[in-house]
Length: 338
Ligand code: TXA
Ligand code: MG
Image (cartoon, rainbow, N blue to C red; front, top):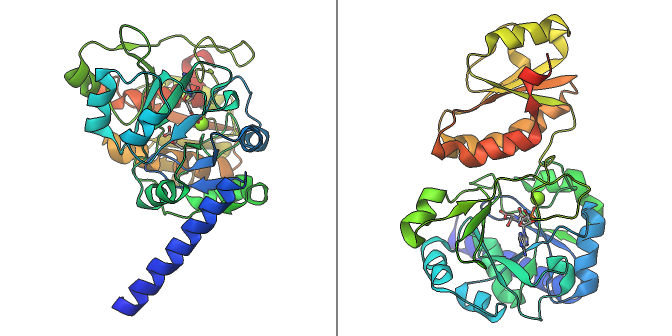
């Protein structure tokens, strides 16, 4: 690219970012890229704009939203308390896939936090969105840019396909390089609690702030969220999906005996015997590379309109915690199905 072309591209990008900031200021919705998944953004101080997010997603109003900010200094403006653990974690992981739950300031409207006195904050690691946050100069409420309970989008095209006409602008920042949602950590109590595993692991957190608990419970979709975002069905493809452990060959065979293998799709680490190769997607054995491709792969098998999707569960090891969490929410155990 010549310098002139590069300068023209830069100007075009900046004018798009200013347009996006303008839309946010006037109460509109902008989909934005992050390193994890695409977000659906509105001004977190503007109640009517935030209500639009819930309407477009079909999200229960009891499930609070994450708020994105430009840096830790801006984050501190929107919380009443900034404990030492927040300072350490923000210093180590922001911008990045870590969300901190802290007591909120009144400027963040109750619609964002579902009436809670706390707010979930993070600084996303994507150059376009960091520029947007600087231009907008405010807190950006942004859940994943998908219909509620469905798969999170990892490309702008995924957002277009699912929410296209219903939002004012989609900023296309390419493919998300982490691919699954951020780790959510509640810092309001005496001991930090991981509410959702993600790109930053428990081990990484504990090496900086000591002992961290993990929220284990699940809440059904209808009950008022005791701990929000812990809905059992989440991130799910449209076709029924079932997970199996490597070496579960016997269960797979029993399952296939009762169904037409031509209508079964597979997402796995290694090929499954008895299913045609064109309906199988093999994902990498490295957790980081796997996570990056997971949602796109699930969307791809979903488009095959099969009667069932079989998903191989990666090993029960710390590096796979976040991926295993998403797979358990997206599918049911095959062993219980046969
Ligand atoms: O990676 C991500 O976190 C992406 C990108 C767009 O930043 N966002 C995302 O947002 O996944 P969403 O809304 O799909 O998930 C937000 C999670 C939910 O589990 C929600 O319940 C939890 O954060 N959460 C938000 N505010 C909270 C609060 N005040 N207390 C506890 N949990 C909260
Ligand atoms: Mg989501």
